[in-house]
Amino acid sequence: TALQEFQYMSQEKRLILDWTKAHDVFPIEKHLSNETNNLISAKKSILSGKGKSPEFTGWVHYVKEECPNVLTSIKKTVETISNHSDAVVIVGIGGSLLGTKAVYEALTHTYASVNPETFHRKPLLFWAGHHIALDELSELLDALDNYTPSIIVVSKSGGTTEPALAFRVL
Image (cartoon, rainbow, N blue to C red; front, side, top):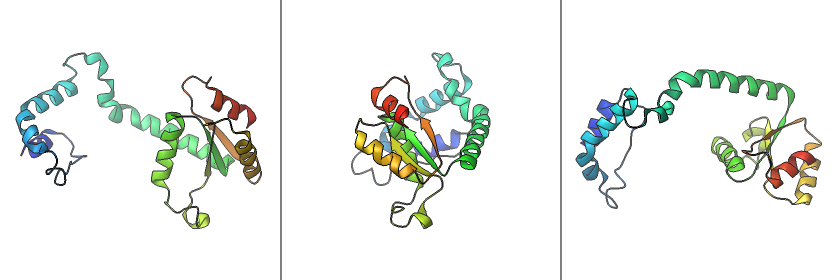
């Protein structure tokens, strides 16, 4: 099938798409088989850096070239925070907050709050800066009295009112 041919052409089989449940809705393989040659050509073009706008393909080799350095930096940061803190407050709004929260929730037991000693990872994460409710900030400060927290501000501009206010209060 087109899918198998596309997988065969890839250097690494890291991602396999299973379309078996989608056939009733949209016969994807039928459409892919018509485009197999174009897909393979596009992939080769992107990987070689010789396609249209090659200056915008820096992301193609990012995993191989940059990830070891990024991972080392992340591990150092985690070690620093873990040695200092038993809680982390993530300050942000919109995608700046929700991206971090989505990853955390994906990696944490769904019912961690029922039995935090068994299911929670350390340090504990708290969230702030997504609204201006001073009562919630006050309650967060009460909760943090029992911890030695670190604060991570996630912001593109640094000037959004809600996270800026929460950071200043914290």
